[in-house]
Length: 208
Ligand code: PRP
Ligand code: URA
Image (cartoon, rainbow, N blue to C red; front, top):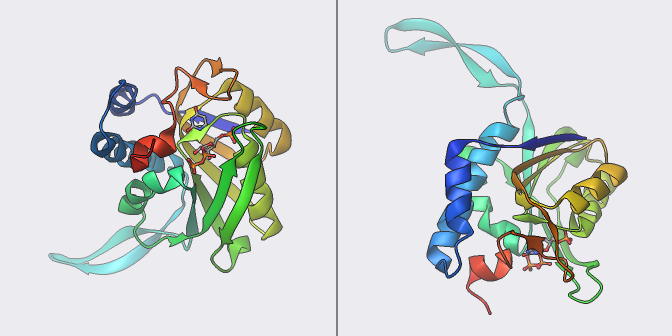
């Protein structure tokens, strides 16, 4: 599995701000979008380009255009919605395939409750977005869903990942790529990442 911890100074700074206790909903949400945009930049580095002949202001010239790559962003409800604006800032024409999964707080198993994928998934690069990769139950179920729809090229963008979850996703789906702003220390007894961000969904939506 390709695993990239994106150790860019801007990302480390912004993630540091997000880890502060008592951060406001507004600030957390803004930073989640900004880090998501930076992760998108990193995760799309390998997109191929083709030459295009255009008429420029000073005459004809050759420019580069992204080669027919059809991208679908896959935000996982609900916290993944917090990263969506930042990803769309970078790829405004992308189709969005929304999936809904919620982790049962006792069993930590994901419960799928929504799936609305765009067409021709077999031709697209899927960019899963979710702030937290904890046990990876949610991610494994999402990748299962995407592969069942024919998807062959899958990348996941996360703000924070736990080593336990990374081992599990590698065992289940070694063919996907993971881009994360941080790999943290471990999970606590409730399946929360330490030091982590706390409950990302609650912080993005201002619940609890
Ligand atoms: C969080 C998070 C991930 C999942 C990660 O969502 O956004 O989707 O938990 O945990 P896992 O790796 O152990 O599966 P949650 O289920 O709390 O739902 P929410 O986004 O609706 O708050
Ligand atoms: N979901 C969260 O929002 N935070 C965690 O640390 C783990 C799962």
